[in-house]
Image 1 (spheres, rainbow, N blue to C red):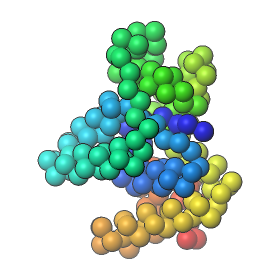
Image 2: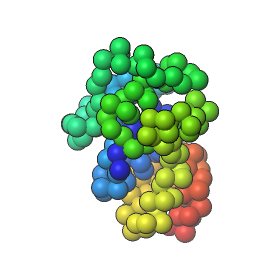
Image 3: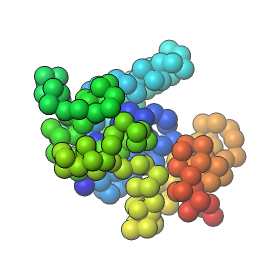
Length: 181
């Protein structure tokens, strides 16, 4: 399955690390556009120059790791698409041009299912999708989540619980499912 990942899934860090960790294990093929990656960097910039620099470094690593994931298109191709928020049209355009099966976003309001269905796309929410991955491949998701938890503990110095970390990362269902970890 090919999934175009919206910027609001790539930033914040924990959500991105879990989602891309699952992709790295082969459970789906990630896609994004240069504009999606730029939106991530600009969101990080709101936290300061150091956060922006870190985001841009992580973006470079993603581009190197998944060289075929970046969908480039001519902005003129966006003219045939419509979404409630014109600022999101680039996302649906990249998904269609990249032959994605779905768009992963936490922004349900601006990606109505009926509009996406007209383009052969579905909208998936990261928490719901990760639960499906967990049900189908529990060992893979558990291993990814444990790695992310350990990284969060190391980087923050806090003794996070799995449920607490994933709830804060807007992955509450996955956090409940993995709370014993």
